[in-house]
Length: 208
Image (cartoon, rainbow, N blue to C red):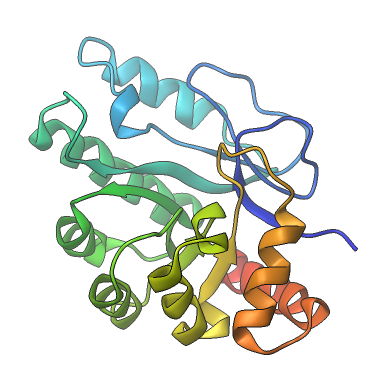
């Protein structure tokens, strides 16, 4: 059985969404493309947007990862401007948004009020209250390796609606089947049923 890896950075994973790095040429399989807040080049933002928009092909499944990060050196205002432009691109080309967020969840919720496509927080590993607020605002949550050992995160996964989750490896080197096995146990369903639901969720965000 192939397990869909919602967000990854490894070229050898064929069943999932490959997040391409700045300046890369898109691969001939499913990928996402965006300007990560840490990669914003203050002296060449227009060139970055030119690269982004000229490399959107039929294999592009999402815009991202993009979003807000309180740790990186790029000024918050610039991050918000770059993120907002990517939201508009998402709306224009009707592709969902894969969002990177570090300690700026409520700002992200506010900015994505303008989003017309699905919004997915990747690598979610925060508190239950934040998860609830994101879900209330119609976000999807994509979970990664931390679910294998993080007990409070396991509770969040257990309680999250099945039709609002994805699973990913991100930049971690492990077999995503482990994650599917863990989440299926937390949910009390078979791995096959979980895999089927993830693919249904993917169809929903692609066609929404």
